[in-house]
Length: 264
View 1: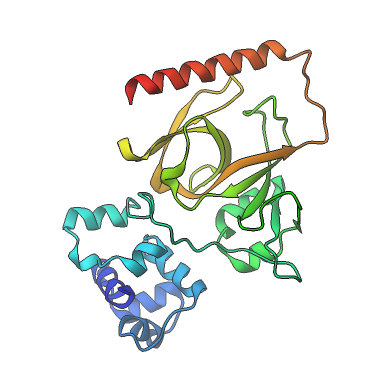
View 2: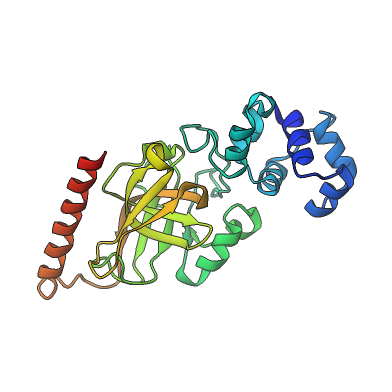
């Protein structure tokens, strides 16, 4: 494990003493020194805090010997372009379980979206979210439910609830599939996604509602990704009144897929 040497290297690259780093992180200098000299191992919560402070992903912080990287590679790591997005499997996810130690499905209502953007890796915040179970979903996978806020994925209606499966390996994102994505700039978004990570480290975001334009996000803005599994709503879809709109959206999506196949 390369944690201690990486912590020391990253602190020095920030131009900080142990005292200064400790003050900025809100911990004691003794802890900083202990982590850097292998006198103590940080808890999972502390690992997340350290990774966030140094702008690096937890798996890279633990597994990669940063001293062996070139200056350019180090800059990429510090900008979020590291092994995590290119296939690393280790990911720390804050979660909850029921009394039988089964993974809960946490619910993120629309009113909690802003809080989730900041508290997605905060055990205290996650523990306060409503939870439930669905017997037809796999117990081997992790799910979370997000309430939509807006009509960009119409005919899935505003205030519907979307169930997502946690994605560990972002390279596995499949073109044309729908995902709930947590970003640092836009918070929670639900879109049809096209994977350009290997090409230019971006994701192309597409709305089912043709009134919304496609846009790209840089992968280093992404915090979490959840693959669309199902959704439920209190309202029936407007099948008769909006058939033409749905067909237009499907046709537009097909054209985008064909355009991407040509450029890739």
